[in-house]
Length: 233
Ligand code: 3SL
Image: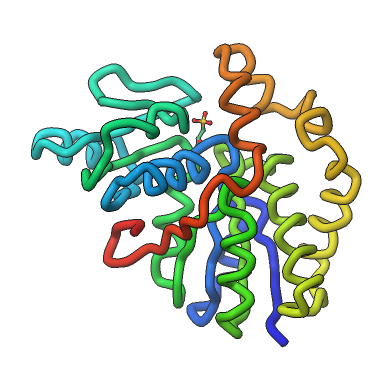
């Protein structure tokens, strides 16, 4: 049986890093939810880049580029990080994305056996796919500027619990167990559970309540974004 662990922040990734792992990167609010949405709505690929400079380079080459810092779209680019901006006119387009935490976490894990993107929006498809891989799994939470966050941890707990129920993993690691325990406190109403969480408050101040609701909705897509030569496809 496979093992599952959780790195609660990218800063801790080096502790768990194992090049044989499948790494599921999550940034529930909002990067990985936006990536799933873009691919679901026809984008050919999403290229995650860590810096604004890289994003500028791609923009100068004619790519569609999304760029967010501190929850806000950077003006010179086509999109920010709202999943709603990735629902139109993407058919067969390449999209480049840089975000405060999520795209950095994806690139951090790029040398592992495989990197996939996880969100509540692709939850069941992802769990089913993982259950067929017979490989140890690390769930990498993007957090916020090195800090822990609740929403990524809830996702890690939900995924851990589902994989355990499917008989894919045995829960031997405290990181996975504690994420599962926390998720069990939240699962009746994750939106309410996150009421006082820091990023929910941050996004609410920016009038992004609808984004939060969307990012907490389950199973809108079967898409499983896999990192291949720098692109999520
Ligand atoms: O941290 C990130 O990568 C973003 O998802 C943050 S935000 O939701 O766009 O503010």
